[in-house]
Image (cartoon, rainbow, N blue to C red; front, side, top):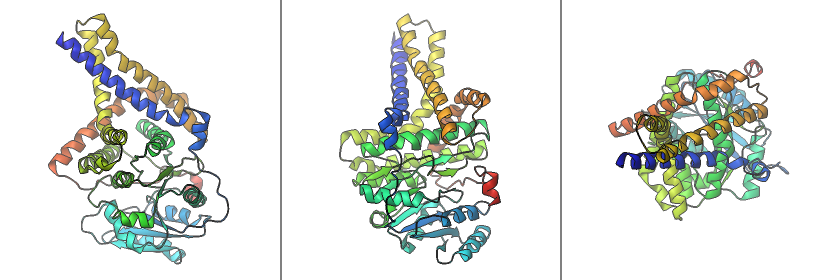
Length: 418
């Protein structure tokens, strides 16, 4: 009897978590009006705001020049680019100096002299040097649309926002079985889920293509220099202070990026993110949110990586238990509820992959759909491993920044040639 009760409770909890996650993923597609509202409005008139664009770069000599060159192609008139390099990274510093020499009125190189390097420390180093009214953050491998700043400028002025979060999209879905799932995760996160968070008044910001009014950012003290998810932390702190965040995703305007090149790189990246979420949860800034619903959403969101890892492992085990153990028929039916939700999720992912390919003009073949479905359980195991590793590192006091290498796998031949 006790075994049956435990199996039912676990199954119902898993079903609820899987259904809740699926609902979040589908948020933007609820109605045509909801989907249309997630896009940038067309800019009207001349841009009125000035931007300071921060590009932290560490061992990014392979991709940095292309990124800054693309930023310099912006159609917006008022912007500067601050490239942040480490004092111990001469290769990247050489590339930064080279590109700065081509546009000395637009590009400045800021040197980060911290002994222990990480992204938030680099960003904080550059913050006092920002002259623009809005600070924007990009990664060193980003491919940015020339009209993005004009759209962001309009979004600030039209909505009165304190923060504008633009879309980020991994593109090289064909590189490996896991890169396909990685790309689709970004598609659902930036295309749908972040819009729901903004609507509810609590949002963990994305790592780049995020724009914050300079005064608001300085008032908040910049980024937490010890947090491994400085973007999430900043979003939580600004949400807790009631700052208005606007999210916009447009396939034309998204910032394009590449997936990690190896499974180990992906594991380390997810470990860093998970550990960062755990750090933000333990800081408890989210407890300052004004409503119970927001605090519950924050608690669930910050623990989501661990819930995902848990469900990915437990659902198959729960089904196996129902098949092996002698349990009542009703209990067996309940244990299969999470599996039904997983099946619906797979179907939604298939539709999402087709939509992703259509929006970006990418050819999605039958083999990609097969990789998507067959790779699901293995991807969940990877997420589970990253979650366990994150907890282990946090308990051991391991807060060093595990850098993700970039090689430009998201760039087309035309991009490389230019």
